[in-house]
Image (cartoon, rainbow, N blue to C red; front, side):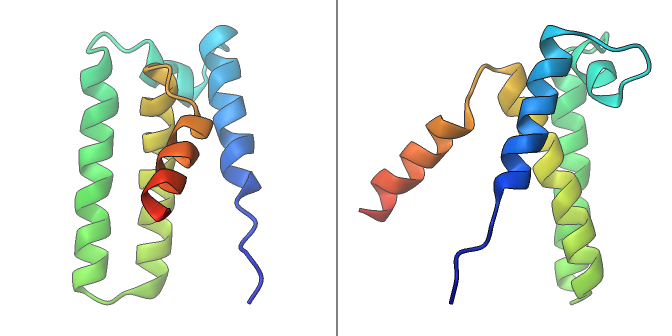
Length: 99
């Protein structure tokens, strides 16, 4: 079975980093990164999306699990970028755990 191409996560992460470094008016990412609540806003969104994933899984709704998991992963990427955590850091940790 071939490995799943997850390069889209790198692409999205790169866009988030670009928005962090070069804010764009009207950008949702920028609105999260520069919200008056600071990190709390990003974490609230992560919590909201996590609950929605849990409910979708409880309901065994495949399409909703996929949709809400995508939202959760997106907001996780925003949180990582906001904290200066690179995807390479996560990959390295996962490889250590696998080995």
